[in-house]
Length: 240
Image (cartoon, rainbow, N blue to C red; front, side, top):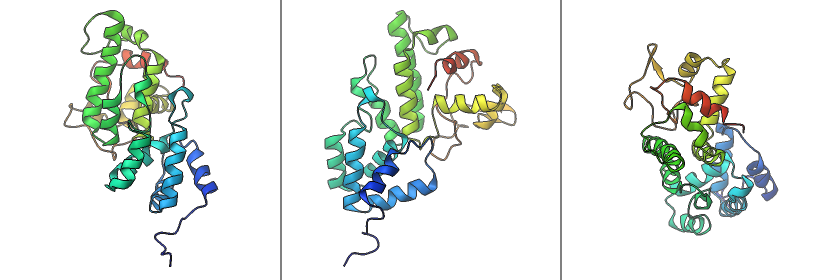
């Protein structure tokens, strides 16, 4: 007799429809449906097969829901399920090894495991490394004049990695959206993404939040203590 727990909550067609919705952010309702599907063997098979189809970066088909599913399967601690996933998608929901400039696999691994503070530090290093390769100058942080040397492909993948492993909450494009929705007022942006404490910029790193419970747009940090000009140029390079 099939128990309620093991009963597939959706048909295959419904599962595929859920997965193919381009959700900009994962709601509690969507997450609950995914949790129920993952309890069922058939549901897991359908989900894994579907996200494999979208793992090709050239098509930019990886969705926010794919990252959530990947994380949830890794977190099951079910060796058999994890091994099947790793066999098909060894690097994560995105095959970052195909990128031309920098291998972002370490960053992807940190984000999968929600090690957001280390991921934030590595994101800054990656951006500096991109500029160093273009300019042959060592960088510890970036000026607005450096943004021109960051290919949009790299900026896109950095942003996508942050989005898909945070339920759509974190990423440069998320911060840009909040900035635009607040009339491009920087103080309003800092307030909305909780970078301020009692009207002053928070102290790094202890006063920032490094969990999935942080407010929308809180991460990643980017030159947060060095004014707005560099971030302005970064936002201008985001057109997705």
